[in-house]
Image 1 (cartoon, one colour):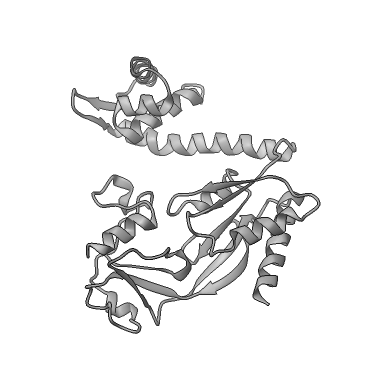
Image 2 (cartoon, rainbow, N blue to C red):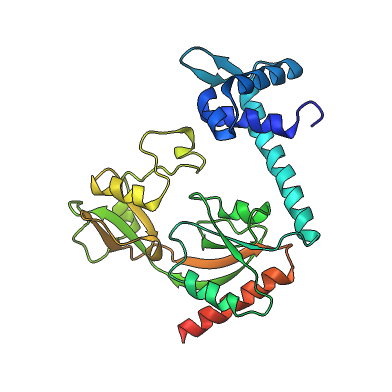
Length: 285
């Protein structure tokens, strides 16, 4: 990256994400004029225009779109290299655990308590992911261990242990045509509008109106009869008024799994996995 420094790439990606120099400057904790100058320097050095600018509008050019796509990969790779080097050198003193908000199946407290009893236990940092990037946290080194839902989360490149299996439920408004059923089939949900999730490619990643980023936002959308959704039962929090659950009889089951990078063989990770499996086995008896 001789033509572009890491910090400059961070500046560019912030503007590309926000499409607003003021918001990007706040996100980066720098002055807006300094950010604008930095972007102009990048454009001059690369010999391309990255943004179309007007007093009311900022948009990526074709060159900017390309740099956003490949630049993010490059920046993630640099970060992963640093984290892996620190791990290999024994710099990390904490264990980092990633999960979806509310996605612990009620096991988190027992898991942490069991691990705390290990003689080599370390402090555990809890990281909350977006709707669908927990596997990325584990693959690029941002987290050491995590809770994933299979088959919804990809497990390629990850070692994992299944903790439990559960059914899936349809979440619908109380006035919905299916609300009074004892159960439904997947075919009954055909044609129903499903929520768009922010951060998931092809859904709400383009800023689509009404896109949701968490289950609580989804429940509010369902309550006003805008959408329905099918989720693992444990992912559904206490329901607000106006929303009910209906079991989906033929939906493939959901598996809550404990996962980690398949190349990570550190005792730190093995100790945590062993403690969690012991705690889950004990709870199942």
